[in-house]
Image (cartoon, rainbow over the protein chains, first blue to last red):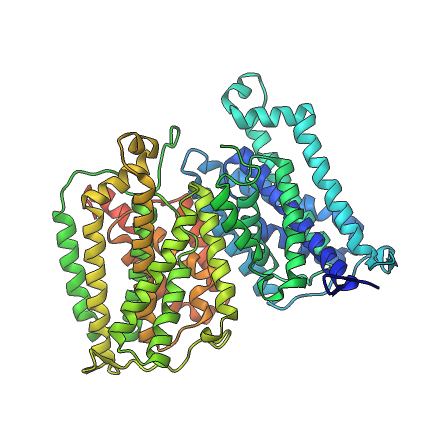
Length: 294
Length: 322
């Protein structure tokens, strides 16, 4: 046990870890938003609601089918991703020729509907979700105690983020995606099914949100408003990072989570607003965002 | 925008204001006799939201900027006016004026940040700034957190006319609403308003014509924020209460919904939309939580099926300007 700037190391590293955990969710969610925005030119306001759906899917899978955490980590994103595909096919598809703001308005409406329905059936208070027994307990690292589950969340989020980055930036599929973002008409003329790619991209972005939701379920309670609490912060993260860069979204997400955690140690009153303040400063200095183009 | 085929907002229409003048006369007449038929408190609530929606529409309908954080100005102005009435002891009209100026001040700060980005980023920035101010409202001592500022006395207008009576209060609200409505109408059709519409249609072109579009956008933002603040300040006097509900992001969403239902970029649409949504909320209050779901469904339906809104559809059908 030692002190840094008059703060016990336990408290400092503890908050740093919480910051990294929050940062994992910011990174996963802003990554999904950036991927969706790149292809669809739509800001998915329902992203928070879909994150919440992921957590509820895990809860319901356990309640009614007995599928546990590890199964839910795969099945829940697929289920929620399919609902995303349906939303894209039936609704979003009609809006591509219109002003981008209509996409925002539509997904905002969807977020209200989804959140409202879940609140009606499950109430506003949170439901507990047990963490998997294989990840219970923790390790003493000497300077702090690291609960296994929290370490897993940070590691797994980082892995998923980097895998997404790799697919988009380094593979042939990713090259198609990036090309279709730049010039969909030209890519279509090469015989690539761009509308299907758009649909799957939305489904994937939504699945990412649901994946984050499953990971969040054992840490926070599963509650209908967990999505709207986080989505506005994620919007600020996206403004700070700029949506032009996948890696930018990941770095900004984790970085801001840590910044938030540190604020909790040194100036707790500001911890809920620090990300918005950083956003204001970034807008003054670099209006396009830290990783934004133009 | 090179490829935008349908932009948000009113189409550039020929200058024929006769239909609008008739509609204005009808609206005024209806609102003057309305308290004989409908509860004044309901009408006052609807009028406050109508003014709020008109202020919001000034930005989205005529500059093409979607603010998702207008609750910031509405809610904070209601805190200002409630505080000034209750703790400082100002007369209601002074409290409302100072609160409106306060909202305008917040509008300058928020506007300077938000207009640095366009489109969806603008929406996200305004939403984030409003959320930040929501947390301040939660923590600041003078807002009294979860309790809000309760038991505000309406006081005497100009120190002379007591506003305790619902009918007196109603006509004061109506006068403020009509004054602000005419001001917005004047702004929209002023040379300044024409530049705003030019920015909405094609900002690079407006810049190349020599307009300092940043200044126009900022001024439009501050005007919109101040008028939203006026609505909030008025609401605090009417309901003798300022609470967190009015600064929450759901309030920002509600004003978007009202304007969308009535018709983005129409002069009368926000008024009709506000009355429709406020009426819906009071008639469907028995459904409890389902009201949120219904509002969401209306949102989706409006975007997918009738983007012009009620007034926009009527105006389009009759080929007139409303």
